[in-house]
Image 1 (cartoon, rainbow, N blue to C red):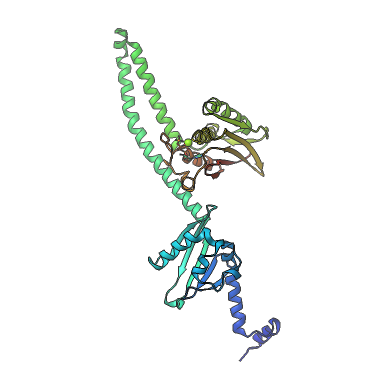
Image 2: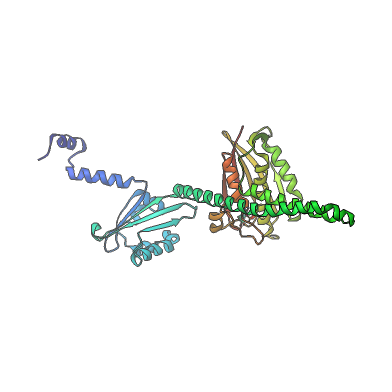
Length: 366
Ligand SMILES: Nc1ncnc2c1ncn2[C@@H]1O[C@H](COP(=O)(O)OP(=O)(O)OP(=O)(O)O)[C@@H](O)[C@H]1O
Ligand SMILES: [Mg+2]
């Protein structure tokens, strides 16, 4: 029996029976999901693929439907995915893995879920979802955890070292008159200066590994950049690279902790010099620094034509203690990341291995 409502519906959509309308509706939903979906039957033949999945594979659906997995694997347009597809196939069939994480050439993270079993009548359903934003949140949390731990460790080390240093300092001062009598006051002076230097190093380390709340003042971005460039120019010259500062947006001001932001930019310029030094001779090294005003934000771009980074380095760049340098601490960028976050800004990185790198620090303008 067809109800009045269904009859009216049939009149408006043509002569489709109700089950077909429902099927069309569900198919429409599947077609327009923001996840990519692919269904293979028990013979491995692709029986359904939605628009999003075809978009991800960058192929028209007509060239895929009705083909089996082997035929799909041999499509020249999919050759770049071949290794990944084979890996997923092996892990699904032999290891019964149902979740796979993939990273594409643009660094985006994808989660592929495979559903099969009795309820699927022998079919295999693959769905792919872009999870880059979740990954970003996860990474930030991980980063913050590590930095907090680093802060605690360094605070306790500093505490342990400072105490004996204070005791040594006190006793040297007590001994000073006797050393003076012996004509050795110079020794006492040297010991005291060295102890003070050690204390300063610990203080600096503590400050940099666990940046305090920024003490903000409004300063000109260009003024600050000029100062930092001046500080690094002689080292750059020695390492065979040129620093080019594009002096525009002279009046633009940011409210920052000058010491902390200087530390960030200095570290980035030093990293750029190192990246250039490691390809020395290949091409003339150049570090280009410029600013771009966008709405209420300013981007400070530091670009080098050095070694660049591979995917592994890029993904661990802000991890504390991650370094590819023999004498690096791997703290520079981890600390920079935290400082910029504390200023309500963010850091964006673009890099091509063998070509160069661009760091973009974004800060709110006054
Ligand atoms: N401009 C760049 N070009 C190429 N690689 C870079 C660049 N900046 C950073 N890196 C990579 O990121 C890693 C981490 O950098 P980070 O500044 O945190 O530590 P580091 O420079 O190794 O040590 P430190 O800063 O203590 O001297 C570097 O070891 C390097 O591999
Ligand atoms: Mg560094």
